[in-house]
Every structure is written in C-alpha cells, then in structure tokens.
Length: 382
Image 1 (cartoon, rainbow, N blue to C red):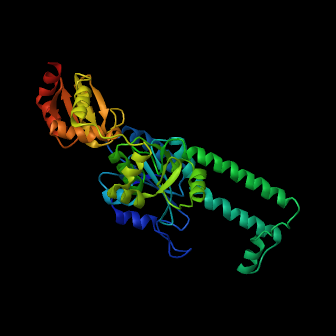
Image 2: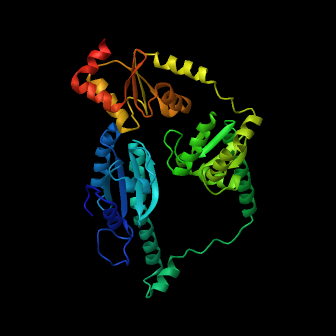
C-alpha cells in the first residue's frame, strides 16, 4: 500500500485494483481484506477541491487502504456503474464489492466511514486470536475453530421479560415509522433526496411525481439504517424506493411507473384530493413572465450559484462573476413546471438560460462568446 491518492484512468485499472485476490497468499496490488475508496469529483465543483485535502490526509493516515480520484464527467462508465449523480461522491469497496457510499462534502462522516471499513478486519482477527490463546495452543485448524466459538449462555427465567421488552420496543418503533410515513400525504422513501437521487430507481419515481405535478415529502434511507431496515419489515417490501399515499404503500419503482403510464396514479391522487388540475397555458405564461422580470439580470440554471449542478451552469455563473455583474437565479431542478414551461416560452430547449430586462440572451455558448468579445458586460450594464 502507498498511503497516497492516485488518479484512476480507466475501468480496467479499477478492476485490477479492487478485485479480490484468488488466494490468501496471493501477492498483488490488493488483498482480500484491503479497502478501496473512490472519490468522484469534477473540476468545476468547489466542494470537491475542499474534500481533496481531506481525502489526501485520510490516505496518508490509512496506508493499508487504497485511495483513488475519479473525474466523474471524464470516466462516465465508472460513474454510471456506481450510480454517481452528483459530486463529491465517495464509494467504498471491499473485495471488489460496494460496502458503503457517501454523497456530499461531509468531512467528519467520510473520516468515520474510512475508519470503520479500514479497521473492521483488524478488529475481528485479534479477538479470535486472543480467544485461542486463552484456551491453549491448538494443534489443528479444527481446534482453532472450536476454541473460537463461545458457547451460548443457558436460558434463564429472565428471558421472558427480555422478550416482552423487545416486543414493546418493536411496537414503539413501528409507531415512529408510522408517524414518519404520515409526515406528508405523499411520502417517498428514497436513496438520496429529490434533487440528488443516489440510484436510478429513486430518480425514476421522483421524475414520475414531478411529472404528475404533486408536492411530496421524502426521506433519505441512506441517512438512517434503522429506518432503512425497519421499513422493509414494517411494509413487507424489501427494496427502495417506497411510495406512500396517505399512509398506505403504493409500491416501488416498477409499480409506480406502471400506474403513471396507465393513468391510475393520477386517478388515485385526484380521488384523494392530492392533485391539482394543471394550470392553463395563460397562467403558466404569466408565472414565467413574472419570474423572468423578477430581476434585471436573471439566470435559470441547474443548482445555485454557490453549488451549480452541471458544468454549463457553472461556466455561466463564473462568467457573470468575472464581469462583476449582479444577477438573480432560479434552480429549475426544484420546479418541473418552470423547467418544462420555460423551454416553450423562450423556444430554447436547454439550460442554463440568461435573461436581461426580460429578453433572452442565450445559453452557455452564447454567453461565453459575448464575454470573450466584450459584449456581455456592455449589454448587461446597458
């Protein structure tokens, strides 16, 4: 092991580094107990730069693990395999298998996960060795196995009390899950959040709900393993996402998608009074016009100026900041009606879109060309 960070250049290189050894004594770049940590980053992402420093320090402090940087937009095959939808994003591998993930610039949580997965094997081996030492030197592998097994304690009368306490605890926790499910009339339990789903199935259900035009609550099951495991038993549904309407489980990705395509989902939402009839075209146009004129210079983008969610949006934000121009922004990822409606209103199919005094200037390429020619500043100051 090296104790420093390497840049990963291809999926083949990753396979050679992360694959488990064929035998315990096999030499190579990794062993069956080695930890591999991947940091997916992008050159335009400021939080990634900050996490690079943390990542490098963790690599130096954990020399028996391997740390790799993966440029998410350049290594698309690797990004898609690990369902990377936002950066920074971290993947933890043991024996070539994903054991954990972390999304976002959370340095303490990253350090905790590295410590957890890099020490898990080191903790279990000494315990077995200590048990064998107390019992005396074994002569065969079978003896080691026998001596490392701790006999179960005989049952006592207190067992029934423990069972009652366990049942009471499960009942209380089920009540908490029920409260969580009923936190919103439409409640979605997903991996990640609606802005940044961490798996393709979660993203599909979010897209369906946005297409239906409903407001919904959500809970990231990756943030709480107790909820993640408890909900599987509570609902008798083993996978995520899970969509609940007024406390009742509708189903997962496949069922929700089928109901959306058949129109059944819309019927249910209308029956329960959870779906507003779509706005008329004139009302949408009035709303869009009001948004466009809410600031003299208005940028419709993916994300926010502090945290752009795509490279094109980041480039336009940087151009405006370099020109010293004051501007307002709207995150089109938060409102599907605006996102789709503005394409028709402006007859411009992509984002970002920059407006000045209510007039569309253009997207990323046009804004950068105007900046290069000096036309951007004069137009925006006029």
